[in-house]
Length: 328
View 1 (cartoon, rainbow, N blue to C red):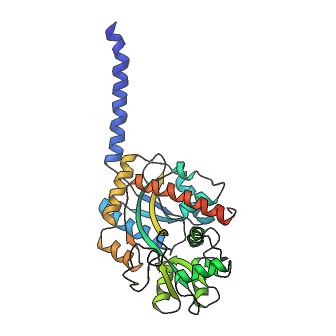
View 2 (view 1 turned 90 degrees about the horizontal axis):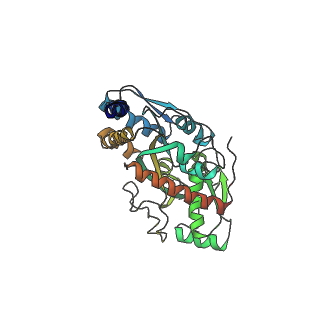
View 3 (view 1 turned 180 degrees about the vertical axis):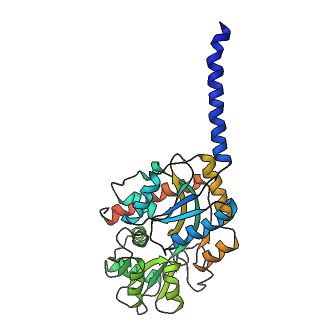
């Protein structure tokens, strides 16, 4: 009797062991085929550039093709939704930016659940925000701008890449912290806003080094403050927000890799290690340095916490600014 009672247990253990071995084999030998990385923007953005240069280095180390697929549209949510619904087998990833957290806070209804259907792998890079102004702006220092805005609500105009864009949210975050109001002028992309600041058609804008740096260096507009902890080596004369009297403003543009929920933890960790190697290669550092961004990697847990915290912050900013936008 005891012998026959043990048979089901032995069978169960054998089957369980087989499953464990198969899972271990799938993850320990990863990758065994090409990896697809979806970028939810059109080609040419820095997010796209980061995905391609990091993907190239990962391909070299793993001897597998890393295919970059651009799937822009609907404020980056189209490509993100594709990854959210992809097979979580460890061969589909997403490289995105701040827009992931912004979209989660901004849109009431998304085709995916940002904190349930997507998991974080690692950051790739981050970059400070720069507040820029037109050359003939009477107030050249940040404190002067804030003081004048406190006395004259909506006097200043600022441009962004569109309602709910990273540049829009970055400025609204600063306005929210300092309880001031300015008039928002949305453009179809941050480039349009920067051009209009240089043309002195609007007063201010905030953007990444990639979108504003050349204009500052050429003297076509003024740099007012940068959000990095210390002065940036490319702009040694540009004061930080902290130096300007606003230490709580720590907005950073970030670029990171994510994956469909359910992707094996072992593969998530393996990809995070590949990213750590890739961002320390000479090629990646040259490309990132040229764009004014800093290579950086994080653990999946830390990246996930960062996303959760950012969503909460953006929800508060959106509520205060009464930002409403429909997902098309």
